[in-house]
Image 1 (cartoon, rainbow, N blue to C red):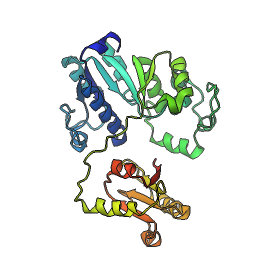
Image 2: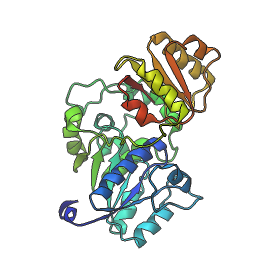
Image 3: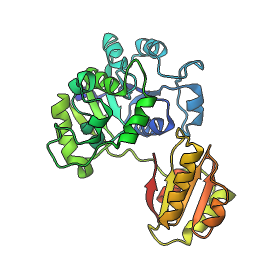
Image 4: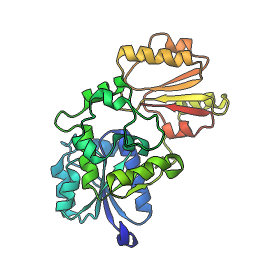
Length: 316
């Protein structure tokens, strides 16, 4: 943001609607606010209501997916300096530029994944988007890497993509159009991809750290469910428990749920498994009662992860 860093800015935050994308944007909003900048957090009323920290601005109730009209009206009438957005709003950098508003692409995925996806020319016009081509390390990676998709992952992801604008294309247009990129990574862990990205993007790429959640009062000390889980965790050795939570958007079929449960059971590890919309297989809890804890519904994730007994986190 250059010389503007010495004055207070008005920054609009426009995350994708999935909770796992909203949370890093919220934590970054808090950081910017603490440094004296005015922040408008833009989302649907339903998502705003789910946030633990109130945010002043939301899109109309009818808005269920990113849409240009409500946001551009807000940008044009609210003296916004920068809008920070995700990859899905491929139309946003161009719209912001027409209004004289700077745009910043905030990647909630790490630098290794961005480097794997490649330069914008490849993302928009590349020929390597056949599923098989994404199962090997691409030629533009100059360092040793094993990061690539498995074929079944590519096929499943492609079924979820927008038919008009693929995720690859959206990434490419967002990177091309924004003023700079900020990445949820740090050089201590991702030095090689963070050095490569400015070269292939031909614009600044700034690591901002992991943007971790602060430990806050997600549950009270008198919450009986949390007290039971904490008592259970207190009996476990340090870094011995696997925490399993697939997120709010993942719904497994009965077949996958059975396979997943079988894998957890065969691992032999003590575990916590958070399930929301998919019931565990019959008698599973009985078979693993000596080493497993199944939590149904919304879990106090930051409290769980902060416990010294947690040694691993399995997510989607």
